[in-house]
Image (cartoon, rainbow, N blue to C red; front, side, top):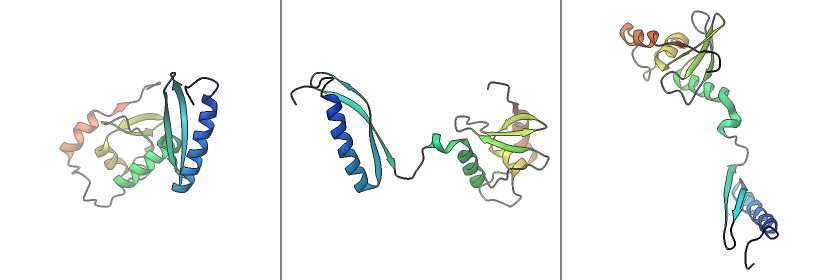
Length: 148
């Protein structure tokens, strides 16, 4: 191959995918060449590698994030006063837990989530829940507005 052209790039991609398939089978992964950009003497592309049988965070969805956080924080779905834990947002550092109460949606932080949805077992990783610690959290519980 002397240079890259629109005509020989599909052939290059097919051979590359064949190599990726063989290499991936040997190591238990799936490799995929994504969008290719080329110039006369060079080609650039990204490679996506995935372990066979595993899902990405996007594929697992928010349910997995919530289940994982519930397990690590020793929480249950139903709260003590009729609240229901409905989601967890990785992007929200201060108030990542989302719950509903009386048809309205609220968000809260880890401390308040443990207070509302804790299983009641004493956990050494759980911070203190004295009234002074929770009062600041309670003040800042924010009602989610439509579209947020």
